[in-house]
Image 1 (tube, rainbow, N blue to C red):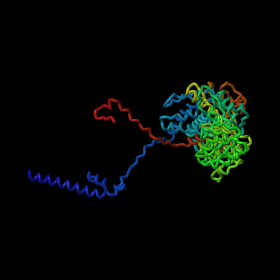
Image 2: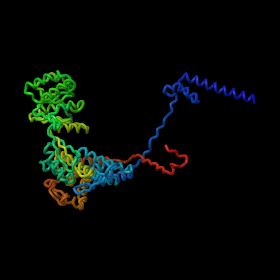
Image 3: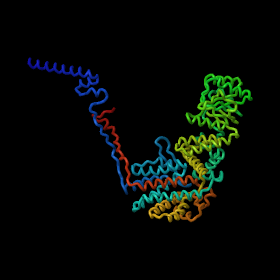
Image 4: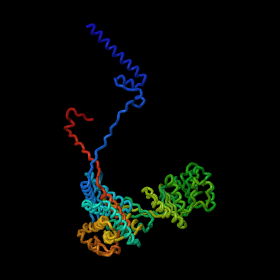
Length: 609
């Protein structure tokens, strides 16, 4: 027993000594290594410096994909395309129906707008959903370029893809068919250009807006009145109104989104705004802090009769602002100051616009110009200036009209060359401000659902109207497309390849679909209507609202040529892409784990965290 006790003590002492030696040697490396060594793990000195000696290789496993080929892929793509096209087709024409969109939060929307319906559709099958996304692309592109005609473009694309896939399944070469579709599209675009009629006046503008808004004459008249006030270069803004009525408010002059720096500048205490008649305008990108910079120009103005002065600068602070406020209160000066609108390079451009409108010299510090050296010749003139706490409106004198026209032409050239949506929006705003035309349509309705529907209709009407002003008009109701299909018959004879002619036939048959669906939605036989329209002159077509054949241009059933052209081009483009598709690769949908029941959660061994 004594020997066993001695051995046990010796063993314990040896283990303690070994642990102490390990700890001491590890402490010479780092505290982290010491703790690791004490637990029996192996760690090198290099690992404690952030670079392990033997880095473990990491294997990344990608998610598996699903592949579909040939007939299976084409059939499922076609099924997805049909589902989306059927959903938007019910809205086509003056007697088209509405579609209800469920919202995740709030009240469902009841709408008649093709592109909004298309964007809301997601299908459960990934391959079918891929087909739906292609038609969604057609609707989106048409909406971006023309602002209207999205339903027509979706229907055209569906017909071309359906007819094209039938030919490909029968053994035709999709590449050659696509070439025939492209050639036919180019021919029809030229033909459409030849047959376009220019907008002749407010009557045509009202007709275009009414048709685009679903035969709503009230909206058509409202758009026509607004454009007559602001001009073709003006901007129509659509906002939510506070009442039941929809009204148009026209903002005259150039509006700047900056208000007075100090409320002490106010001249009309009842409305809390500054009102100047025949004001002088000082435009600079300089920050005015010292009063000595302003004294020379203020003395010159006083000597010339004391006209009101509006200072537009980067900022007016310190003693300069205090001096202006004190002299304004004492009645010595009639002056107001606002900060320059915009930021960075855009601020310089906007200040140049203001200088051109008012006929003033833009005092740019980059060019070494200063307020201290400013003279009366550098000041501009405005017939009326109204400054509120957050906006300023400048109504310029008509004398600077030529300079404004040159500036507008320059901005239009920039607008044609830009691809950015943001730049397009800002350039359009600048053109409208220079032209002195901004109209705000405040939409009123009894319910939120009706408000959304009216806003979308007015948006379509606005876009269609500007498209018509830009490129002219053609017969509406799908009649223009039916008549174009007749011209394809002659064009087919110029194609030598039989499969290219097959592509031309696909476009020719697809062009009949919009008119047929409009007639079907009106409750009549679409094929019979299409057959009769084909045998009529270019201006004739079927008025689904009146249920008779009329001269579409005379009766005001018209479409913008730009909308028709954009729909035709985009549908031909996407049809060619789908026809040349042989395989589809999609994600495999992951199955969601079934929710755990309360009984399972309370079972022994299960923990709630």
